[in-house]
Image (cartoon, rainbow, N blue to C red):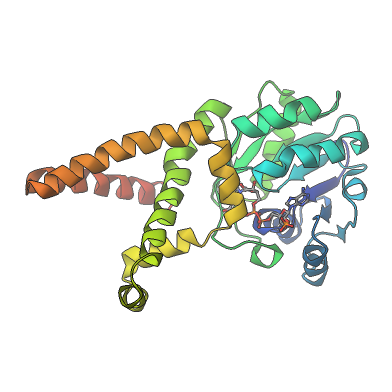
Length: 294
Ligand code: NAP
């Protein structure tokens, strides 16, 4: 691939699962960039050095972003604006700034006014992740075959294409959409499932001790899968729910109505209703497998 940014330096702010995976993928795929990474946490920076994440690990945010053609903010969504505030006066004119945050309306609302004139802000969101966090959780194939949504939001088409080329170089498939649409889709596909997982596991935690021990001992795949999702990073997910509240509450309302429908069907022994619903949901699983996204 060819570098279409103003320089071949990429700065990644936040060296967690996502930031580390981007840096590792750039190196693994031998893309023509040098990568400077920065994290506010000294222990995380030390771990990044030990794991050789990025070509350099900066001790100050300014040193990472100076001269960069692309700056990627891979911090929790509640921290995006403060990162942009610190970076703004050190950005080179013509550089592209993107983020990897799981909510988009809030990131745009909080950040866009802080981006200096002459820089191009193109929000993004990789639909790839695991329940692990920190630099050690990163791996270079994380984005392989996964969607990476970008929200050009009126940005320069050439800069958008430069970003899309890089993301394709990481193995991702890009798709453009609006922030409103993004937040509604993700509310149902990602945010609500996490909320349900946190709730189910929370309910189990509150059971009386003997029952709780046996839930853990005999956890069949159903509960075990929920515990995997509910082990996700608390800071990241707190920020997601606080920043996509409107769409999550809308989907939660719909979910509650459907849950009441099933509750009623169980109470009145309406097997046909249960069977019909479970047949329809099975088809969704097949479509996901057919689309290669399982
Ligand atoms: P992570 O593993 O928790 O890493 C985030 C890193 O950013 C942490 O080391 C954190 O340090 C650091 N950080 C926080 N505030 C900072 C600041 N102001 N300046 C510099 N560094 C800061 O998180 P992640 O999973 O990589 O997620 C990063 C972003 O990608 C989030 O916005 C998330 O919504 C999004 N995302 C995540 C996934 C996923 O499955 N994990 C998938 C797609 C998108 P501290 O530990 O000191 O806070």
